[in-house]
Image 1 (tube, helix red, strand yellow):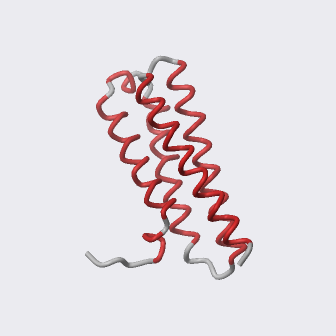
Image 2 (cartoon, helix red, strand yellow):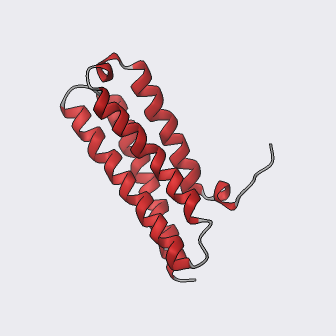
Image 3 (spheres, one colour):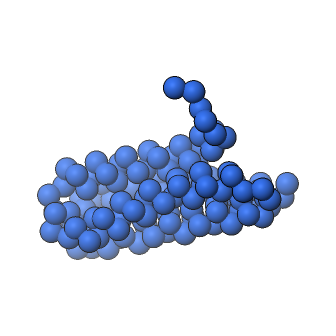
Length: 122
């Protein structure tokens, strides 16, 4: 299938989609998350929001507006980080899954910071 939009070229968007797949896989296959469906659903929504904000931002006209959506994506990423910390502390998340997600969050964070800097400096 052909690409429809430039957001598909953004590495941060690609990594956010990968993180989203990890979040869904872990929350689908981990019966501990069935104990707290509220946290599970909020974690899923926040992880989807990262890529969604990046996609929406590409449709904006000014770089300042684009950077605003990149900031919103970063905020959603921090929400995911907060939620996985809570899930780990409540023993809903295994240590290996927790560490894997944290590594991916750090990578995405770096990409988002670089993207925002580029948007504001162009």
